[in-house]
Image (cartoon, rainbow, N blue to C red; front, top):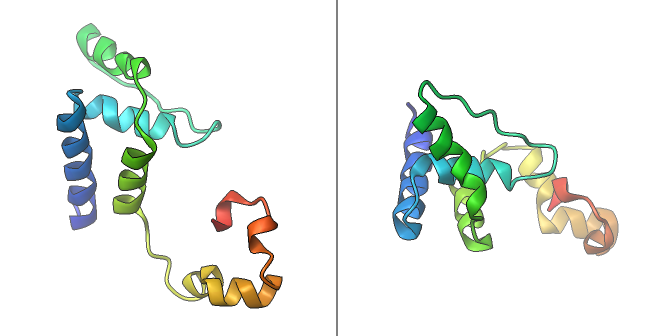
Length: 107
């Protein structure tokens, strides 16, 4: 596992401890709450594991918890992506109108 993977796992475990849920349910909820077109694939060897994983639908992560997981898992794309995403470039390219564009990929 990479350092990045360990940091993500640590944050998932931290949130799980805060809310009193298993880390597997937190991880599944994080995926489930990403977008409409993201469908987590649940796998298990035992019925008890399946039941535990499916229990993730009984709660939702808060916006703050989602932000924490998104932040710790963010991938740095480097140049030119970081430059194109910068507010200086976007203000120049879109004349300060970037906030009016409804595009989740650029936010």
